Structures are given as C-alpha cells and as structure tokens.
Image 1 (tube, rainbow, N blue to C red):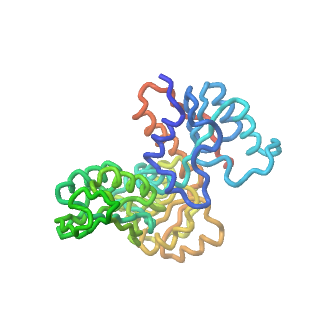
Image 2: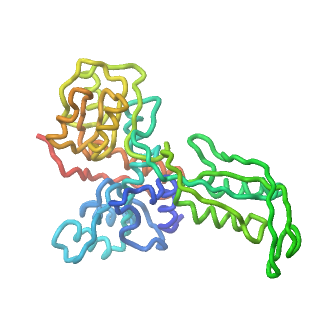
Image 3: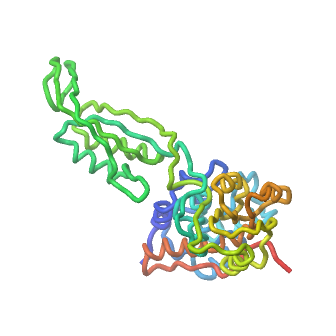
Amino acid sequence: NYMKITEIIETIENFAPIPYQEAYDNSGLIIGDRMATCTGVLLCIDTIEAVVEEAIAKKCNLIVAHHPIVFSGLKQITGKNYIERVVLKAIKNDIAIYACHTNLDNVQWGVNAIIADKLNLINRKILDPKKKVLKKLYTYVPQSHKTAVLDALFAAGAGRIGNYSECSYSVSGIGTYKGNQDSNPTIGKRNIRSTEPEEKIEVIFPFYLEKKILNTLQMHHPYEEIAYELITLDNSYQAVGAGLIGELKTPMKEGDFLQWLKKKMKTKCIRHTALRKQKIHKVALCGGAGSFLLPHAIAQQADIFITGDFKYHQFFDADNQIVIADIGHYESEQFTVQLFNKILSEKFINFAVQISTINTNPINYI
C-alpha cells in the first residue's frame, strides 16, 4: 500500500497549515521529492545523524521531525558540522526530511494541547491568539443563487468560527447594473439598467485560503462581473496562536503540583521560581521556548507558567506574581511524535509509520 510523500505531507498540513508558522521558521519539506513513493515514515523531534541511520535501517524514506534540521541558509554542504552531515546522508540515501514546527505549536490541537492533555486541563484557550489571520469576504448574489454560492464557499473552508462551521451573514437588497455593448449579462440586457433583488453575503476565512475562496466564488457565482470586497480583520483568531491557558479541575498545592508535573512530563529536573504559598488553579504553558509569553500568563492571572529555555535573569520577571516552571525544551515537546503518529495512523491505517527510538535531547542530567 505505497503512497506518495505528498499524501503524508498534505495530511499533516491539513492539521497544521504551513502559513501558521512564524516568519523565522523553516517548516515544510526540507529535503526530497514530494512526488516520490513513500516506503515508510519515521517520526522524531530532531533529525540528527543517528535518526537518519535509523530511517535507513527501517527502510523509511521519509523523516517527519518537529524541529527543522536546516533553520537558516546553508552556503556550503561539506559535512563540517552535524547539519551538513545530516543533509548529505539524507540525500545520498534518498531520504526526504519534513519539519512541522511552529505551525504545530500555533494550532489549537497541537503541541500545547498534548501538554494540557497530560495535565487534564479544562476551559482551555490560546494564551496569545494571532491577529490579522482572518479575512472577510463580502459579495452580492442574486437570491436564486445564494444557497449554491454559500455551499461552495463553505466547502472551500470559509465560515468556520471555533467549534462552528457554515457561519455566514446575509441581508437582502437591490442591486443595479448596466452592461455595455461587449457585456454578456446573465440577467437583463445590454445597454439597459437592470434592477435585481440580491443578497449581500459575508463570510470569514483564514488568510491563506484567499486564492481558493476567490477561485470558488468565480466558479459558482452566476454573474459575468462579480462584485466583492475583501478586508483583513484585526480580530484575534482564537484557534491559532502561541501558548495555552487552562484550569485544573481541583486546585493543588504548589509543591504537590510540581512533583505531579515532573512525573507527568517525564522530566528529571524542574527549574522554578519561589513558591507563593497559593494553590495552583490556572495553568499557562508553552511547548519549547516560551519565555516571551510570560507577560500574557501574568496578565491572565495564571498561577504557574510551564515552558522551557528560561534564562537566569528572566526568572526575576516572575516578580512574585506567578510561578515559572522550566521543565526543559525537549521535555515539553517529547510527546509531539505521538501527535504525528495519531494524525497519520488515523488516516493511513495499514501504512508503516514508526516512532524513532532515539532520544535526541542534547541535554543530560546528573
């Protein structure tokens, strides 16, 4: 049951669209031919040399990683460091490398949701939702074609808000138009002003679907010349953004929570700020390096902020308003491979998807 690498990629990107990655990131297919037949998929956090060797041994010609092996441009590929050696080894052995990084961090059911699942958090929401991600389309349709146009726009991805789909607003009005000698009006005649009962339709959609939405409108709208307007919304998009905040069903003492966190996240070490002698109820978190979200966690009155990669001086910024718990970068993202496995295994039931057995954490504890 072999399939193309592009089918694997499309499944991942339906879950975590590439346009949601941060500007500095390099998610996507980094090495390889997306139209090649896929013999098997190996899932990992980091594509180090040992992982490429594991892929060769397991006859997997696609590695799906969380972190991109190539983050900034390579000017030479001579094998002088581990990044160049990985690229050379992958190319020599016809192994494709794909990364799904900050786009997976930023989607509602991505990296942060896994941590929230481990901690049984309820009442979850994105800690710092993205702005200017949504666009709104206004268009004007004869009443007879309203349903057909709306159905097509919904199928193309418009009208989704949180847990709801097929969201739109319409209002009835009167449109006028007069075609010239070269026109071919669907309704009315050339050189004569037409007056037509119309519906003004409004739908929102994520910015990256713009081309698809406009193509769909063009295909299903009956008019020769389509009147429409596009605007970018300043609204925060609650389904996309950095970090997550939620609540424990039952508040816990700080020390008890930290011990429980250590166990749940399988970490040998938690670096944390002074305890505040208050119970932990509201929990903010961010997989990977999330120190930039501390002001958001404090503003939303979280009792604790869980992430990785806090620097010494940044711990002072807790300022007794919150407990910072640094569980480690790798530790906060270690379960991401299980998410990849779930996404792919549900779609491709009888296909070889394997989780790497190599611990790629470069940090050791003694």
